[in-house]
Image (cartoon, rainbow, N blue to C red; front, side, top):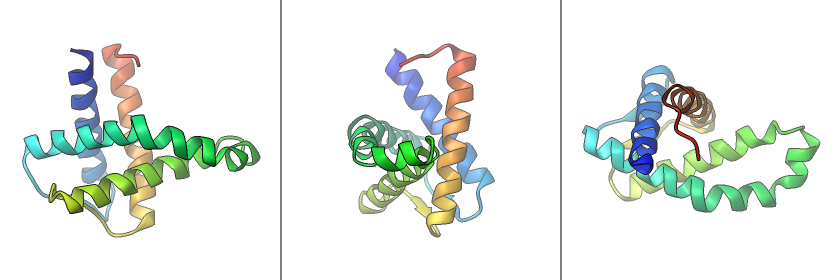
Length: 119
């Protein structure tokens, strides 16, 4: 049940990011958005820890701010996979992806706090 709630939270965060960030677009149904959220969850579980370890010197040097770039790279991977799987999530460039990752992180954090869902 917790995994399902996390996927719905990620889908809601992606929807908010698409609505707020210019250059980040989604064309598809709610089911497709849930599939994109599932892909995001898989990327965050598998690829993001590897990226974090590989970029650890930059994270330490920037006092953790480089984690924002790691989040943007993870979202960029999701956008590329979305294009390959024809799921409908697109971005105009790194700026839109970076802002989208920031919005997704903040909205997901807020919703997880409100719902009480933890890792």
